[in-house]
Image 1 (cartoon, one colour):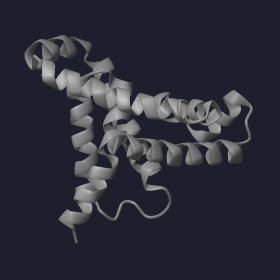
Image 2 (tube, helix red, strand yellow; image 1 turned 180 degrees about the vertical axis):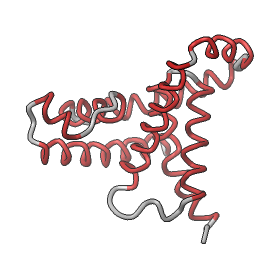
Image 3 (cartoon, one colour; image 1 turned 45 degrees about the horizontal axis):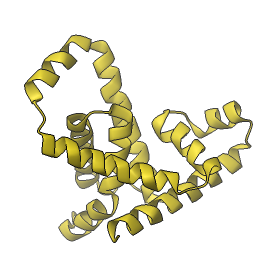
Image 4 (cartoon, helix red, strand yellow; image 1 turned 90 degrees about the vertical axis):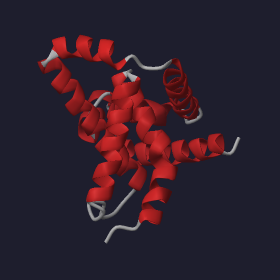
Length: 165
């Protein structure tokens, strides 16, 4: 059963994180907006998909995976990108607001310790698994998972503080 109020609360709490990840990975307002919509449509259409654990990390993974799908699709059809950019004609307002949201996420990322931020960036913006990060950095797998989890919690707190500032 879908609960519209619960969904609105989830959206209000996590939309900046989702949009920020999408904007950082795609670098394009319309693409980030599309991914954000797709992620929340997935949450709405399959409310039981989240079973346990850290919701922010889970929705971040969904966002990252959706962005990687978009990037793979663009790599398969590079000519479509130029046509889409010319047709979209994004407004100055939407571009400015997107940059503000991306800047908010970047500022929040800057407020977490570097050892957590670098691992989050490798996982969410670099598309690496926890295992691959451990291999690349020489940090034990359990430590990688703990630092990412703690970093995401701090990121959530920083974004909440930015919302009320």
